[in-house]
Image 1: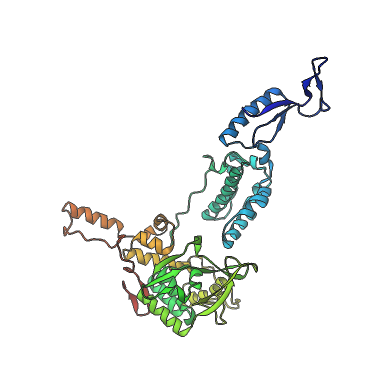
Image 2: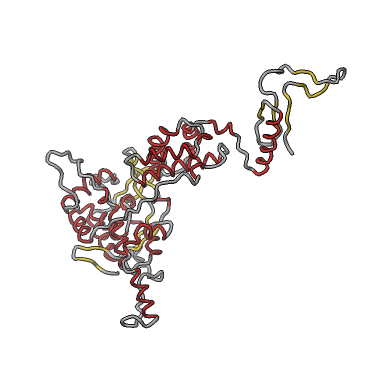
Length: 440
């Protein structure tokens, strides 16, 4: 077995005359026994020989298994570990990193940052959970904070600073995920907003409602992303803002995708391009920094000055005025500043994406296909978000069984449209001013 115990108070070799081991200059000072010679493990000293031998046995075994963790490495404070080792290596998109930094700074470090890593125990975490539960923070935001903390501690495990992640303890019970439904607009509301928004920005509503694009993805669409012949729209980039500075980035999750483009959406795109020709806009790629590589793309949607659209500015001066005209939110109070609008968390641009999903599912589109068009990593995510938009799912199964046993009224099996074999362009819907234009 590798490793050995050394007596630091006596010399290793005996005196040739007396036959005894002479004292060293350290005799009577500090801890007497030192364990050394274990590959990859720092030396450690002990008061008694028994303690030294016990630690040698445990450490040698753990080292052979690749499980050795030196408790001294866990003495670093959680806040220091985050600042020196975790944050600099956090590889995420700039917007994601901003959210991570905010959750850590406001909610983790003030409560747990002073504790050494090895003292972040299940008991401390239960107390932390109780503090979070006493706040007005939403369940989803609290879960995001806990997820951040768990990721930090998991990294500490990988760095061999702690043995296990205490966030995985059975007694540390996370708040249950919110069951809040994604709410869609009625088609009448969506049409009203689309028709009341100004002409330059009408195409944003069309793409959100007709193709399910996220807001930043709409702002990043260019003419080269449109496949007119195949009826497909390629989602390859988005326009993001951080600290008031705009930049190009890949779509959420770093994943590009292609979505069905119904003929009605294509017609709207052609009309928009005719009236508002694309403008080339140069922005940094991947982040807002001046040192980032810059790229130039023609964009379909720009400001009247030929710049990329900033999300916050667009929401304040384009989106919310249209919502007020449509009666979705109240008009501005008398004397209010141009940017002072009523809060509308459920009526942001993302509601168009929910409405698109509701139309697709109610029309019988495949969940697998819809997940691909929405850019979800799994159809399970789509079902978790939008299963309540499938009111006929149970009825179809009941009808099929009734038909099988001859107990149905007609005895005829009607094949459903919610099938993975649905053609690529089979259920594209878009609201137009005349009403709904059906499958293209």
